[in-house]
Image (tube, rainbow, N blue to C red; front, side, top):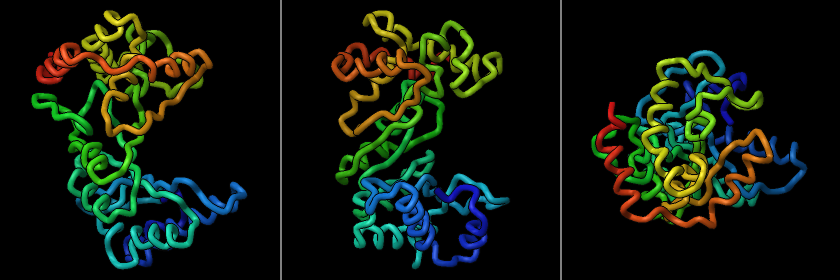
Length: 263
């Protein structure tokens, strides 16, 4: 949505009826799918606080005014809901946009946010003083208070919260490629090692521990994870029956956050 389409950038810059964009995109999806209504339509561009640079055809962020101004995206969503073309609407959160997320949720039109929430960065759902990471501003809690759900994307932190990553194994050919020797990858593997006791002491895989943590939060609706094999799917499918980690275990995790993973 709003990606690599000719003319969209110019329309947003000049303020030409942004509301038409979600409408035209949804109608195109309805035709392509051969259905009369979408259960969920999600705007895949977060409501950033300041105008983003709009260069070329692709960009990943919308300014809050692209949502709220007259003829903005919110107006388009409202029209789709009233016309019965979508059942629910949602939008993505990119971090550093807590106030903007709350502003949009306060319209009452959106029933789902899409946001990262991991053992590496829990700030969408838990305060983590001492942790140096992008701040997601407890938006899961904000959504829950307003009757909206949260779908968690990249629950395994781009695959670094897995046993394979801990061992430094090569990724599956279908998985997103990373340079495992890069500075960032080495850092992520050290962070994964710091929380690996959750898997080791509970007799589960690190991926299972990561998803188990996510599902502990009462505001989480679902975790949206990719998989490359049926074995990986079966691994994660076992998690919902495991229940939450006990408070003393989470206290150890909170200490790791407070120590910024020992950085």
